[in-house]
Length: 101
Length: 130
Image (cartoon, rainbow over all chains, first blue to last red; front, side):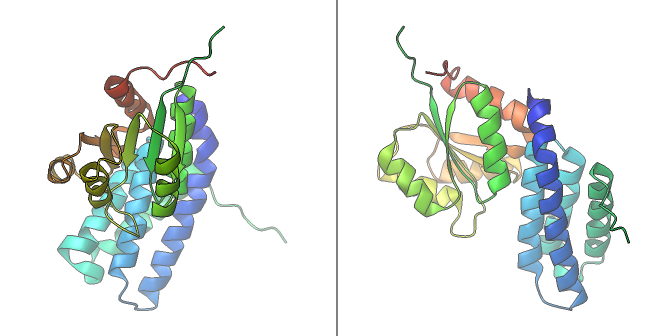
């Protein structure tokens, strides 16, 4: 039963996580001082991934959130790599749709 | 045949995905689930229902869930057990629950399936759909 529920909600989780990661990457690229906003998005990804049983995703997101809030803020060198790893893992869960034409 | 009341759970969380997935998991286990995405919805449910259990996220845009829970408990507006439901570390959740004088916490890190089992330990089985 829980596997059916998880499968039903996976596409929604992936779409939500991608949206949050895109927003975080854009904020970093723009040089915005957006540590609280990105940390909040990572916190949400961690919570949703935990409920989904995606514990590796949740751990990555929590590590990123911790780095932003406690360790080095937006300048922490691990942040970009954490976002990249998360993005890769999300793509493994559901490969992005390629546009044709 | 007499209808059996399903035990009612109120979940407060700013993530619509968490709310919908937990509702699906708990509904499948026989519970009636009320969901609140913000404090306005929480107040609407609280004034109209008497839930058997309240699960409260901690980090929400409007307020910290443990602060909200402390108000509910101090004002005796909710008799039911109140548990924090969060992905924060257990030690922090334990401290926040104790400070708020509520019943405890459930870690989101357990995943939906284990959370349902924990709910069953706290308030018993959900009951049959009426």
